[in-house]
Structures are given as C-alpha cells and as structure tokens.
Amino acid sequence: MSDSKIFAQKPYFVYFVATIGALGGLLFGFDTGVIAGALLFIQKTFYLTTFLKEIIVSSVVVGALLSSLLSGKLADYFGRRFMLMFAAIAFIIGTLLATFAFNPACLILGRLVIGLAIGISSYTVPLFISEMAPAKHRGALVLLNAITITSGQAAAFLVDYYFSDTGAWRYMFAVGLIPATLLFIGMLYSPSTPRWLVLKGATDKARETLQRIRANHNVEEELQAIRESFSLKKAHWGFLFSRYLRPVLLIGLGLGILQQGVGINTVMYYGPTIFKQAGFEQASSQILATFGMGLVNTIMSILAVFIVDKIGRRKLLLIGSAMAGIGLLFVGYHFHLQEETSWLRWFALGGLIFYIAGYCLSVGSLFWLIIAEIYPLSIRGQAMSFVTAVQWGANFLVTISFLTIIQAIGAAYTLWLYAVMCVICFLFAYFFVPETCGVSLETIEKNLALDKPARELGQPLNQDSPCGLEVTR
Image (cartoon, rainbow, N blue to C red):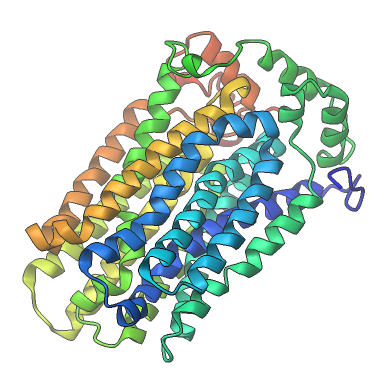
C-alpha cells in the first residue's frame, strides 16, 4: 500500500504527505487541549480532589514521556511511517477507554494510552515531514505540525464549548476518534521517507520516493548527499552523548525544557480554571475564553509558516520570547491586584493573548522544527526521541506542580516565575541557537562533523538566499 501511485508524479504529493503526517499534530493538540473543558464536568461525575485532577491531566504527559524515550530506536528501525500508524491505533484505543471510563482509574488509563500516542507523534511527525521536505520549504512544511497542534487545541476548546451546556465530557473525548482514524488511513497511502530508506540500505526505493515528492526532478544529487551524510558517523546510544553531538544535544535539551518552563501547557490545560480565578463566572465563558487563546495560537502558527523561511529561526525565537515575557508580566499584575472589575478581566485576557502569540512565534513552534534539523541522519530518531522525552519530563513537572504552586505562592508570582523563564529563553536563543533557515540537512550535518560551533551550523552564508543563508535543493 505504501507504493500507491494515487498521487505519484504530482508536484503536490509532498504537500499531501506532509498534511497527512501533520494529523498526528492535530491529535497531539486535541488530546492535550480537550481536558481543559472536560475537567470541569469530570469533577462533577467523580468528585475529584485537587491531586486527582493533577493526575488525570498529567497522565497524558507521563505516557508521552515514556513512549518518546523508548520509541526512538523503533523509529530508526521500523520507520517513521510505521510509528505514525502505531500511534494512530494507540490514539483510538486510548480515546475509547477515556470515553467509556466508569471510574477515575479507567480515565487515567485511557489518558495514559493517549499519552503514549502523543509521545510518539510529537517527535515522529516533524521528523517524518522534515525528511520529506525540500530544504527551501522545510521550515514551512514542518510548521504544518505546529499549525495542526494549535488547531487541534482550538478545536478541542470549541468542542468543549459545544458540549458545555450538557456537560457531556464523554462526547468531548470521543470526537478525537475522527482524526485518529484519518491518520491511520492516510499513512497507508504514504511512502516511507527517503532518508530512512537510505538508512536501511533501500537506495532504489529512496530514489523512487524522491522522484515522487520532487515531482520527477533530477534527484541523484540529493540522493548522493543523503548517502554521504549517512556514512559520516555510525549511530548507537552512546554516540548520542559523545563530544561530537554535545552542542546540538544541549540545544535540543535547552529548547525543550524552556518550551515547557515558560508555562504554556499549564495555561492550556487549566485555562478555564485560570479564567475562573480571573473573574469569568460561567463555565461556558471560561471555556470560550480558553478557545480564544487557542484561536490566537492557531493564527500565529499560520503566520509563522509564512515568515519562518524569510525572517529565520533565531529572530523569531528572540522576538517571540520577549513578547511572551511581557504578556506574562501583565497577567501576573492583574492577579496581584486581586480586583474583580470588568476591565481587569479583559486586561488579563489581553495579556494572555500576547503571551500565547509570542510563545507560538518562538519556542512553541520552533522547538519541533529545530530538533528536526540539527541531528545526523544515523541517529536522528533516537536523538529526537530523547530530547522529546526530556521535554515531556519538563512538561510533567510544570503541570503536576501548577495548582500546588498557585496555592503556595499565588497566581501572580507563579506567572511572573514563567516570565523569568521567557527571559532565559531569549538569552539561550541569542547565545546558542544556530540559524538553519534554507540550509539542507546534509549541510548542517557536515558542519557538525567539522566541529563548527553550534551557532555556525547554518553557515556558509549566502546573501542572495532567504534568511541570508545557503539554499540547496
């Protein structure tokens, strides 16, 4: 089925494949976002304590952490396409368990299985798309994943709002079955990535796939570059921690920890709870305000697609992290005043929107893109899974502690703590993150083999190309 000719020889085939793969991102966003509204009504069904609420929300993160850590080797062995099919099946099973849960334990189990699927798709989707995309369009295509993540969250909040009048939280979960089924069917008609095929020694199949996704252009030069990059270094887990990979490993780990450290998922997971504290009294208005945040997230993700290959990764990281920090300062100030006036509620909402816009333009979207670009082919799956596991670990720590920290020091100081993390993100991007805009994956790998400093992995520069960088293929 993977050799289907339905879209063969067509220039839009690579866009079809990228869009199908990005359904994994849609599920990632939907299943992390839907709990925000559902939790308001699950509480009424099972009479949850604060601790149980944190466990239900965080069980997805635990599952994602485990699967992202353990499945990297499988992605290199079985392929990116196979792992996405496996993730689709796990999404379906987990959603069914959550939908028909008869007690908190069953619900937690279902969310844990969904987390396993999210962990796999969270790194496999950008990996799959980056290995399919031509260099000059790679940023935009990989950011399809970011668009679908944020679209999935926005859709989840809209679904929550639709069912909020009846409190039908089971239907909120059940909607996730639709994209999960589409992902599985779509992967049946998608090929394996040419870089993974070269990794497995299937050069002829890699050539055939390149001809399909490059609209029959001459692909021999690209194929040769892929083969040469694979021969640079051989991979094993110990190699991931070698001096050779240390710079890019630290970049991935730093961005992953900071992506969660700025607190975005606590805002998304507990959005209605935050808006309740901000003075939005009705459950429907709390969910609708959270949907507004998700909509902004989606719009900014779409904007990022159009500018990431023009402005570049580093500039967006710097601009966005500064915006996010400023937004959190304003929101924290609202909670610090502890007044119930109407204009202050909208002041808080405006600050949150500015924060989300900045986050989405920066580390929210670009973490997934950058880690899909900077690791050598021979260990790309393992490296991305390890970095993603650490990112999910940071997600878990931030999420499981959020309500407890708010109870201990208050919402204002909690949000200001996240603002400090935005400042750290700005400094990290400025001093360590390379500009990879328009540079082929093979060029980045060769620069790494030449022991170039991390910030220079995107060189040599070419002032005539997008972002001032060399563009190949």
